[in-house]
Amino acid sequence: MLPIAIVQHVANDGPSFFATWCTQNGLPFTVYAMHQGNTLPGNLDAHSGLCILGGPMSANDPLPYFPHLFALVREAVARDKPLIGHCLGGQLISRALGGTVQASEHAEIGWSTLQATDAALAQEWFGPGPDHVLFQWHGESFSIPPGARQVLHGMHCHHQAYVLGDRHLGMQFHCEVDEPKVRDWIVEGHQEMQDSNSPGVQTPETILATLTQDIAASQALASHIYQRWALGLPR
Image (tube, rainbow, N blue to C red):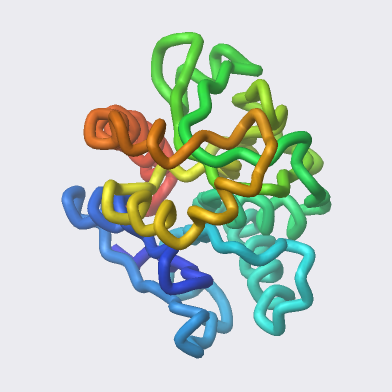
């Protein structure tokens, strides 16, 4: 099987549980670490799918590799190679496909309870139940790109996830988090959390109090998401 291409933008936002899940399920992957000066592949001939991670930059920033990344997103859709975007990744996919990225209604940091916008689609991708609790760290959000269907919405940020076709998923949240990643973000982003007056931003103490069990529940949900996404990968 060809490896999944994973695009990493910054050092402290790596693939984390997504990489763990892929390894556990025998799915090879190649990480393109853009912060280390890696070059994106010219096309997706050598890859089975494309995963785009998060980062503190804006999807509207004029980063030199963004135009080529947009082209890879459009190639993935044209060739039915599964796409998955986490936070900034979901925003970049939206932009590449004709959507927009702008300030979120409220910044979100911490755990957020999301509801199904499309009940049948949400059950397919996120499992049973009306609510899904997922980790957030963002100040901007995407529009639902043309042709996609919204799957989840939230109280503080309405657009939380969309599906395009039967194999492409864009998410505003971070289902790939593990405990070390969240702890690192809290240390680095402590001032940002303290300075925010957004109702969607939790305190470090609130997040840390139940982090181990919250991460376990999040990764169980992420496993469902990734399992559904992986159905589209060629074998």
